[in-house]
Image (cartoon, rainbow over all chains, first blue to last red; front, side, top):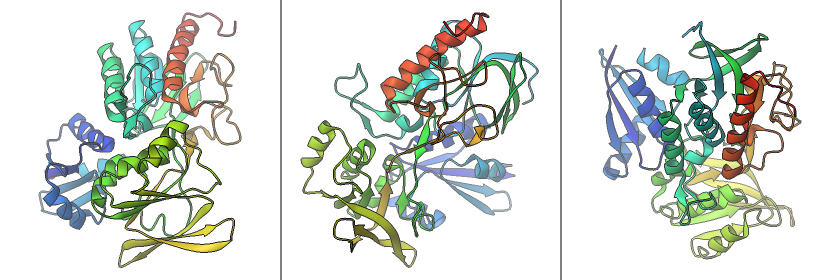
Length: 82
Length: 315
C-alpha cells in the first residue's frame, strides 16, 4: 500500500507531466518538487535515484520501504504503486 | 479494460499526426480513442523550441505546442489513454488491438507512433544512461549547470538541443560524424553565434563513454580523416543522432514495413491491411517535420471518414 509519493520535476520536462498525469488518472495524490524552483533539492533527487535526470518518482509504502522510478516508465511505475 | 464496444477509430500514438487526426475525426463525431505509451505530443513535446511550425512567427516551445494539440483534440472529445498497443489483429469487420490496458476493437486504425531517438550502441552508453548519458535535453539539462558537455549529432535536433543546453553548461563539444552539418542553414547560423560556448568537431566518430566512480568523465572518439583517437573531457553526453520508427509492435503483423522499419502505405495512407492507416514520422517516406505530420494526420482523418462510410479508399 502506498503511503506517499514524491515526484521530482523541472519546468521543461514533458515526461514529468506524463508521470503526474498518469498518477492523477490512477487516483493518486503526490508531492511535486520542481527542481527549477528548488534547485537546492537537486542533490536530494540525485542521492535518492542515482540519476541526473527527471522525472524521479519516490513511492513510499506503509512499511516505509521505498521504490524509486526514473523516467516515465509505466512498466516500473504500475507495479510500484500496486 | 476488455471492451465489447467497437470504436470507430483507434489511433496508436498521440504525437502531432495522431492529435491532428483526432481533431478532425472528433469534429466529425467519429468516436476516437488514442493510445500513447510515451509522451503526449511525441518528440515535439520534448523539443525545446520549434521555429518552423507555421503560424508561430516567434516560434513556440515544443511542450506548449504539444499541450495545445492535446487540449484541442480533447475539446472535441478525443479519448486519450495512457498505455501501449502491443498487437493489431485484423478480424475483418473490425481490428482488435491488444494493449497493456486490455483489448480494444476498432473499425479503423491509424498508426501514428512516430519515432524515437537512436542510440549510439557504444561502450558506456547503457551503463551511464541517466547518470551521464541522456536523450532529452529539456528533461536533464538542468543537472549540468556550469558543467562541460558533449553533444553527439549534426542534424537539427542536435544543434537545437545543444543551443538549449548552453543555458546550463559552461561549454559544449558538438561531435559530428560527417564532414559537414546536416542541420538547416538557419540553425547553423544561430550555432555560429554560440561559438564561444559550442565547439563543433567535424569528422569525429563517438566510440566510447568513460566514467570514473560512477560519473562520466570523458568521451573517446576518432578523427575519421587522420584516424587518430581524440578525447573530450566532459561531465555528460547528450545524444541526437537520428530517429528510429516506433514499429516494433508491428513485426509479426501483416502490415508491411520498409527496410528501416517504417510503415509502407499507398497514396491514401492505407497499409497492406485494409482499414489500417499510417501517418506522420512512422510512415515510409515521411519528411520528419511537425508541419508535415499534422497535415498527414488531417489527411488520414478525412480518408478514414470515407473508409468508415463504406466508400472505397482508392480513388
